[in-house]
Image (cartoon, rainbow, N blue to C red; front, side, top):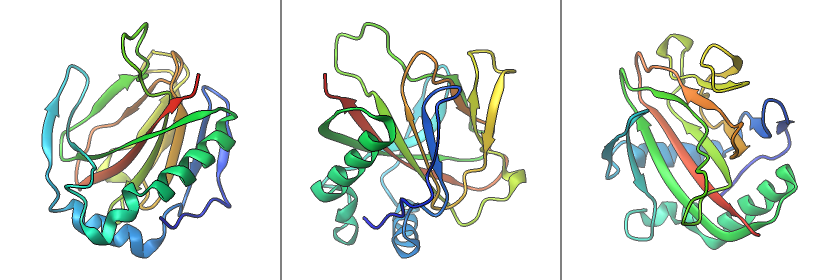
Length: 195
């Protein structure tokens, strides 16, 4: 995968996170987006979100996009995350695609699972994909200073090819505001801390 790591902005407040515009190569982004329009989506509904999603694997990723799930891409992104967050991560990388349509929303949450009986993700990297996202489409990524939905720290427009990465913790409160128009696609790379 062709990525640009030159202009990544890092911040530790309100929780460790990083952001970059034009992170993903333009042609690759176009190819991925064309595939996502016809990909095998499944609707998932929980108490805090409703969205379409699926796990990327060797069976459902077309040959021209196999770079998305290649060991080289996983290792490169793992190394990037280790550098951004000063951590050690396992080689395991799970890749999921999300799609949000009109009226869908992801309410405030932190992705942290307390005392899990199974291994849970410790870090995430998100890549936004769309055909240009006007502000009145909604679908903003919102990060919060606390679990109070009024306590907004930052609001980020899901610009095409942009990246947002963060460390999952009790403090990593975030949400996606209501979609009013358009189709908001996100690739999510999940990482696991090496303990």
